[in-house]
Image (cartoon, rainbow, N blue to C red; front, side):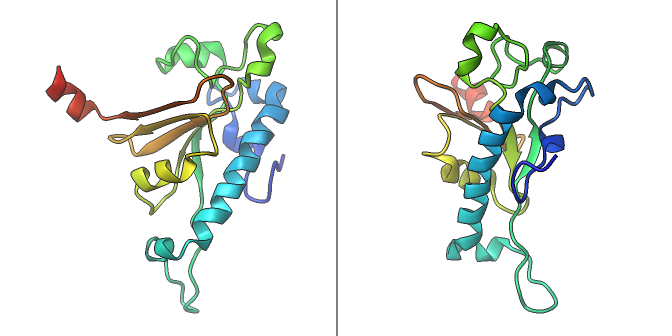
Length: 160
């Protein structure tokens, strides 16, 4: 199912194959729409041309956004060591469904350094975590206080 011009529901699926994402189409679509805006933004920035591949016809291939994780069912979340209240979780108390669960994605832009991609997400998502070692950025549409962090295991070990 196509959510936007460049994103499909399949990209946000639970990797165990349970189909949990099908219950969260509207929430996922909102996230995909924001990612679509960001995709347009990074492809119109002149300073990012150097990260785009030059094609034979002397045009440049557009940068794309890869989704490595979207929705997770509780079983898969536990299997991958996800947080108990992960924004990726598909099953929550229906009374708090408005909290925008199902609106999370772990993302990267092939060819673009993760810290630059992280900077681009500012102001678009309330939840943002840069995973330096793994080279991806977690984004989510949480409500309430914004949360931004940089996960740098190398520096965390030095501080401990």
